[in-house]
Length: 170
Length: 320
Image 1: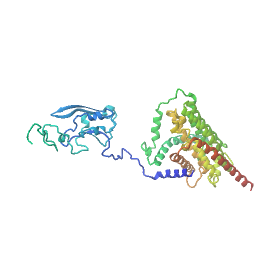
Image 2: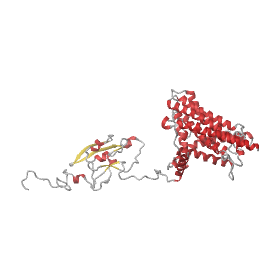
Image 3: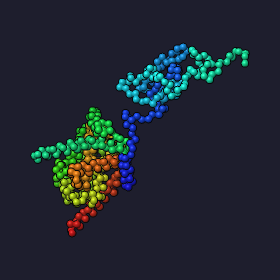
Image 4: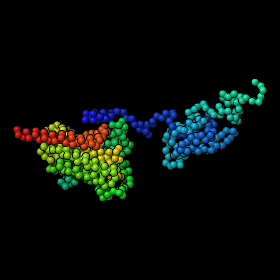
């Protein structure tokens, strides 16, 4: 009986505590930089698309919400289209983990409600942002051994020139 | 104003006020529960969220009013009406202020209240029975047993007040408390009546007929739409009724200094409404056998002793 009264009193005292609620539309909650929200496609520091259409994100996606098509242009791979169906996406971040080129990234933004379901299907032009996202200096083609126009074999960062296996010189 | 017009104004004024109050209490309760859990509660619709009930009403009225095909249709439909009707009828005997109150001078006022609150149990039992589902039946059964045992010492606790005031007339009971509120000489009776009142309205520490985590929603598991809404409003009307009666019987009703009588009555009533909600926020639900043991082994003997001692004191004083 006494403990019940004690409980009542302590519960009553909560009337004068600070409220924990964040009044959402007026007050925005703090979202950590690693928050898993809206998915974007980033560009490398030169402003080129980072995505190389390897399909790993699409494979990793547990709900199959990513679809893309590879195309090739001057030795570089691009997605011809890149489509994310956000009405299916569960924001698990596996696509970001799978991506070998830091192209696909999740951002701290969740305010993407729509009145019509088709509007939740984002195309490549909706997903592409002009910046580099969470990895500012990274450019896949600059470190990869692949030869592209303007950068031959052995010219990438931290890459030795290729060894001529058939040559006799040391 | 002619007496007829005054009477009608009284009746409809109280009816509408009680209905609105019972509806608005859903918001008050959610708001207070929120505060006691360090939240805000509903604060969007209207000023402070007061229009939340309008939104809820629109929602609940547009829900499908489903009567289960396996239910006993007539009893199923009547059950929620009984709780509303009986509780509103019981409110007629409550003296709100000297001139406000439908039948506050009824010379069996207190007995009328007891009769009506006993009838209100039928609503719960019928609802549980007519639903023809196991959870509802268990809820209704629990309600019957709980009400039966708590009604007993509720009446006995009230007899202490009747012995002191010498009347069943509620307005006269209020007048009898001019010098000293009955919460003083009848403190034990007051505590017992509050406990019984909580059980009577099946509010949280004693809400075993509903027992969400074990019985779905208890006796109103099968109810939807406005039929469920009527149970809800009935429950809140019950809280207001019991609070009003506590204020009337033990805290001197409308009496108090400075402020007008009706304001005193409302302050006292709302204090207990708040207390009821605080109980819900703070206390866990006892087990069913604990509830029964508590009722029969603690409260009933206590009520009997209280009544005997009160009677003895009154007789001894009269003999002097």
